Amino acid sequence: MPTSIRLVVADLAGTTIDFGSSEPAGVFVDLFARHGVAITIAEARGPMGTAKRDHIAAVAALPRITATWEAAHGRPFREADLDTLYADFIPLQLESLPRFDDLIPGTREAVAMLRNRGIAIAVTTGYDAAMMAVVLAAAGRQGFVPDTAVCAAEVAVGDTLADIEAARNAGAWAVGVTATGNMLGLTRPEHDALAPGHRADLLKAAAEQMHAAGAHAVIEGIGDLPAILSGFEAEA
Image 1 (cartoon, rainbow, N blue to C red):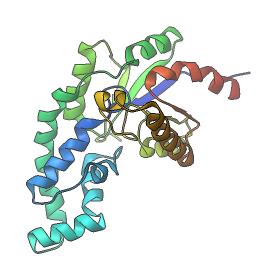
Image 2 (cartoon, helix red, strand yellow):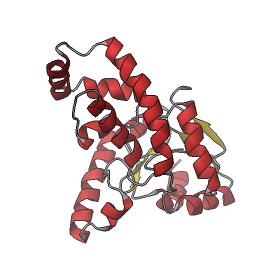
Image 3 (cartoon, rainbow, N blue to C red):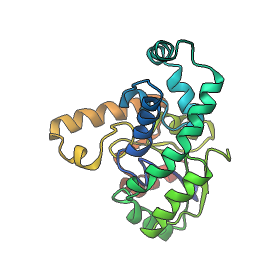
Image 4 (cartoon, helix red, strand yellow):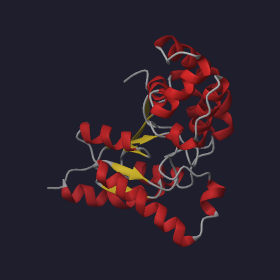
C-alpha cells in the first residue's frame, strides 16, 4: 500500500524566497572584495547550500583565490583570516537580506496545496539563527509560515547539489529546483529575459547535474512540487 508523504523540507534562498538566490552570492563577492580579493559570482555560488563559515572556507580554498589572497596579503590564507571574514560577513548578510526577501512565485500556492493534503512544511538553510529570523519574518509577512525551521547552527527540496546530497543521505526523496535558485543563478528579470531556446538549454544542463547528484525528480520551481508527490507516494 502506498505510503503517505507527511513532510516536505524546503530550502529558503532560491527555493521559497529570493528568486535566483542572489542575496548570498552577492554578499560573498562583496566580502572578499573588502579584503582585496576579487571573486566571481560563479566562484561565490560554488559551495552554496553549506553553512556560511564553511562556504567562506571553501571559496578561500579555490586555487585561484588562494593565490590571489597570498598576492594581496603577502602570506597564505589562515584560520584567523577565516575568523575575520566570517565576523565581517554576518553584518553584511543581515544588512542585505531585506533587499532580497520576495517569495518565489508559486510558494504560497504550493504550501496551500500541501497543507490541504495534511503535509507539514519545514524549511532549512545555511543561514544562522539571526539571519533565518530575518528571512522568516519577511516570509511570514507574505503569507508563508513554515511549521518548523532548522538553520546551519542547529544541524530537503533545495536548489543546490548540497541539498540533494543531504536529502539522499537522510533517506528522503530528493527534489532538485532548477529555474529559481542557484543552478541558474539568475534574478527574476534576467530569467524572464532569456530566449526560450537558451532557457531550455540552461534548464536541461541544470537538471542533468541534479539527476547526476541523485535527485529523484527535478522541477523548475516549488510551484511544481505538489504535482509530483503522488508519484512518490505510488512508488513508496
